[in-house]
Image 1: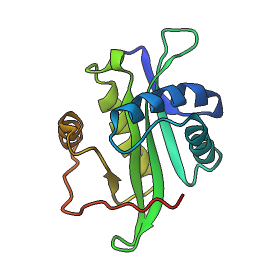
Image 2 (image 1 turned 90 degrees about the horizontal axis):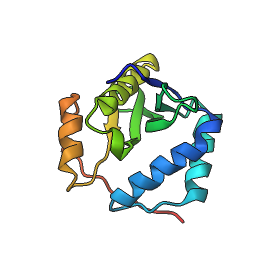
Image 3 (image 1 turned 180 degrees about the vertical axis):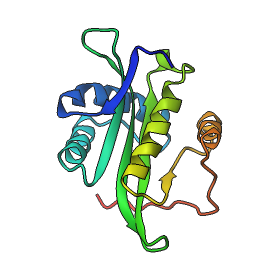
Length: 156
């Protein structure tokens, strides 16, 4: 990763950039479609309540506006199986022009470090079944496929 990249906690002023990244991510995923209203609502909720989660961003420090070029979210909950706090890793994306430069690896390591700082006992994530590139990436960083299968019930 180049020295001109910084990873920091997201701020409310970053929402427009985060929405652009999420729109790109949700266009790639099978289950989700971009929704500016929903994304803004979710991002704002996390940013106003850091006890619920953290959003980390990667920024280009070589530009005056410090362009946000990547993000990852951690959401916190409690596991009765582990008897403590755990994290859900969501919304991991690096802008297409910045991939294969170590930025994703730096983001994921920062997310792991953040989860440890919050005394999390586990990080769980989901990826599309056909997204083998993401699966290889996460396995490279120590994640293992779970024998459990996710199910969802949308309540809207």
